[in-house]
Length: 436
Image 1 (spheres, rainbow, N blue to C red):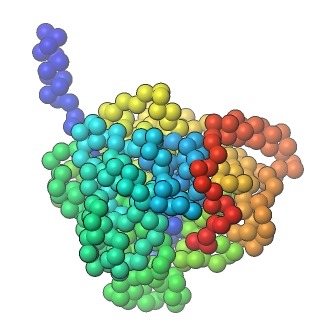
Image 2 (cartoon, rainbow, N blue to C red):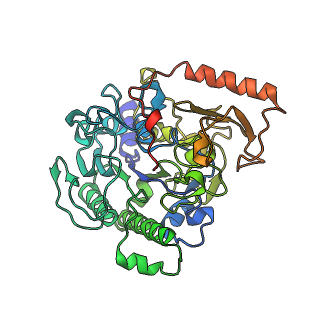
Image 3 (cartoon, rainbow, N blue to C red):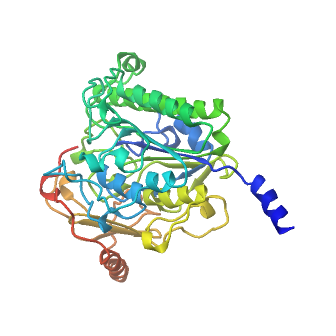
């Protein structure tokens, strides 16, 4: 009888879900329709948000491209293993430490087909490239930025692809191709756009669509955002066409906030109503658009203000796939599924933490204690500790540190305890942070 019950349960077991992680690059918090953007239509991202949960307090663990990706791939604060900055100096040898186990490695071991399309930025050496970090296929580039029309450096696996398509369109095409090749078995697709990172380049057809935007920079940015939204739309359409959309868990984030240093946007992005920019620990640097969708498993049309962070993606994806992770993995991320489906009404995290050189921050509940780079606002050096209540002051405009000294001490103590588990950066870019 027990054997029969086991066989029946096995036969009726739900198939493993497909997992898709989509990352935008240097997006402004304000520049999607579901955050109220009026001049850049993002219908496909809007539809994705409507199909699941949008976290209005969604964060990334670093205000820069490569550190965020390191945290995403490992489910750990990247400061735990020294990947605090973008690879610099001997960039050929610098990258995600080989001792860190990645999300695709874990899923590949669970019989998932794993593929990456887009921007890697986690190391250029042979041992650090995508095919050595768990991906069965790769189409994209290894560095932190790329020309959108120049095929040099665009790889298929380890060889030059020679692809002359507009890069964002090419990424959408390759993502659809990967789904088509693996639609009959569970797959993991990591689609990491370089849009809307500089250089500001768009195809003429899309530029014409936004001819009504007078500012040339914003017009090009809008065309680039639209191209990314179109590519995402093709991925969503393919999943629906193959009737696997109901068995696909999708995440969408930006890798950090838009670069709006000194009140001037480098790429045309807007982070409003947030204050701050990419490369700062203010909200504008680390709070990002954040969507999780899994039709039938996660309620649709939900806006959740509980703080979450991109390092939660790994444990959530693994839980959905039925892949166990032992305590020795030392994950910092949290499985969000019980919070997404309503089983757990509490906050997923007691606190979220940041360290980026001398900049640092902690958010606990509505309170945020932060030290940030004042150069991004025309000042010099890193600010003293400032305290904000984000529920009442999302724009971090009213410093409450003098009025709430006990709260400052409590948050500082919590941050110090977290920081005790971090290591010295493996390379330091603090003295030479680029402008974008």
